[in-house]
Length: 383
Image: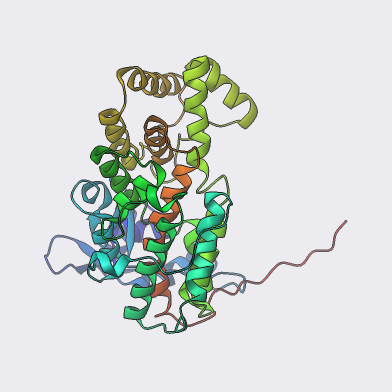
């Protein structure tokens, strides 16, 4: 069943128009169990949407994805009905992963890394991909697609990815501690409790975001019944693009330049060469990304007064020129910048966080018919 806002969005109409359809007998409205909301049958909405497109299915249309995992609201993403901005201050990443997977958080031992040996001397993004490949290679029953087996594999994989981030074993937190602490210490061995809390908040806020591009890649892999490790590898590959998981690193560079040259010159140069401002604007949150506010609050608690003033100046200058409001990438970049973490740490945090959401979508896709993502091209000769 779809809620009113989602049904209206699917049809491309306003709420009043949707209720007009009900009053004219074109749609049937159902009451929710608590009697407070109107619900609409997915099949009825899809049928009306097809009529609006021309009364027939088109061969090139991809599958419609109906999900019970995450809903994007004005207040930010809601994981199975729970707002992420609220969970960021009350729940651990492990607990949120359990929520997304309809499972429990598990014990610290459940999140132990696999024995995959020392990581190669490569960049962190490549290490994360290497961890996925090697953890999968060591899982002799990786083709076991039962939900409980997939959840066990996901916990082990996340533990392995975090384990390969640090350069030396001495720089790593014990594996019986939280994922947030392990990751924070791997990125900065002197991480404070406040830094660990900020990393946990970022992990929670970035755990899922409905059908982001990388999540679609994971679902496509799941539809072929690829194992979890291969599906996560597809997500990691897609996340590697600068317009997705790498966006926070661009925002980090903006803050570094703003500190070095001043906000005006930094913003002007970025706009000159990139034509947009990284860390600002979002296609879903036109009134501002609620996740950014949470992370910027964490930044304020960690930063010196000079750096607080600098970020405020950057945000105010952007607003004065009617640039869209900050998004989660700016909040993540600000935390990475003020903690002195490596410039690509935002991408690392993003990748680890999103494995929770990818796994949830992987599990959900396994309940659908296989190979449903089959489009057809429109062939045209060149020239």
